[in-house]
Image 1 (tube, rainbow, N blue to C red):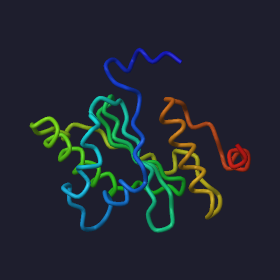
Image 2: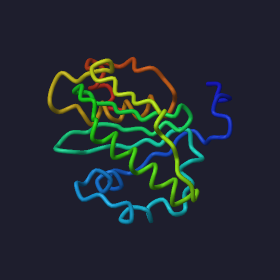
Image 3: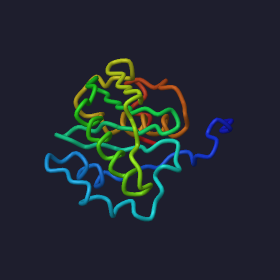
Image 4: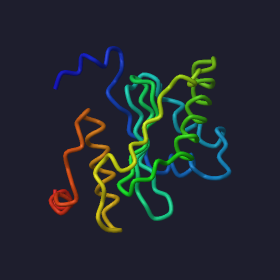
Length: 156
């Protein structure tokens, strides 16, 4: 696939779930997680992809630096407003720490497609859906999978 549209960005950076666990805690403080990225220039990537595990459910959040957007994908249709707000706080803090200047995100888009992305039809497949969302996001692909393909993905 042609990647010329990335111009100056590495494609994506996938964070681990432990980072997100600290990021979404009610007592979030940037100082607690800033060491996690001290050797990484997160702003050199087109997309920062975050697997989110909260309350027994897997979702995916994205800071899309190329498109200047915050994104949230949930196979149960939630828009993840509070998670997006926390990502906004973090990216501003991270920019201030690493670039020594304020990042104005006031014009950035928020994309939380809710039920416009593939939806699970049960209570157990959220992890597989989250993995597929991340796979599609990393490859700039459309979401063409549905619940009927989940058993296939589990076996891969």
